[in-house]
Length: 333
Image 1 (cartoon, rainbow, N blue to C red):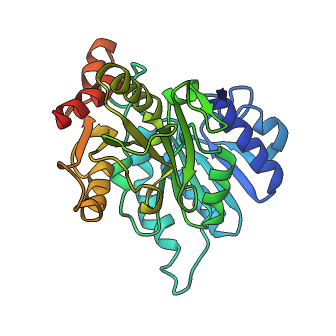
Image 2: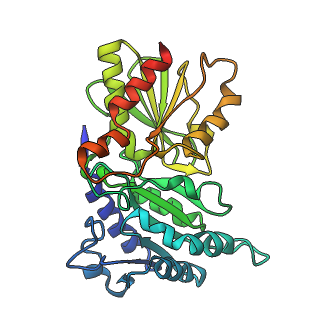
């Protein structure tokens, strides 16, 4: 029912992308062999592709700036930020240079740039190595925000980003690296999935044969396994039937693959509340679903707190399967 681990799948995707396109470069701190990156996603790339894979000095602004310069000059760049928390140090290069360069010269300018950001907590890395900073990059003209999922083929996702010729942030939940890809339309003994919508689209996880759902869960890719666990508990312990939607592209939002079939909608994400992706999803869905929603859309976010390093305190802050389950039960009560 499951394939290779997400980290292995992503590493293989990068090998295939570089082999297929000699214009692609990879930049980042400590990404060259023998280290192969902090999470080993770039392992083997420098040995195989030589100078097209470069370890860089410790400067996120310089790394993203160099990647954007390569893209502006006609090549393609995949940049790794060691921890997503440090992407704030490249905020100016992303927002004021890369994103704006696509249209501020009086004509469309290709900017095939992907900035990979390992994000999220649940590993005890503490306040500055555990964040999910997605919301700070939503709504920037010219900048797309995506998240790796266990349903979407990573090579197809990377090639989609490069073909779009606009800068993309690709968030990758660190815990997701250790989980396995779903394939063949099978999630587990209960649930099946299919991809819907244009472009990368969204994965729709459902109970085979069901068409009447109490609730639709919508989550980014890193939360997929937690959402599936919540769905399972809700069905087996509370007789509440949910479907799950997991989009690969978070912004610009494509509602084509995100139209829920449930009578209630719950959007869950990592990161604290306030100006979030979940709030954007709710704002876009509310007028479309106005005539059939039975109650307001539920938003589930992390606590309004820095993320502690101590595991027992970290658990109090971050979103878990039981957080989603309790939020759905409270909404339906």
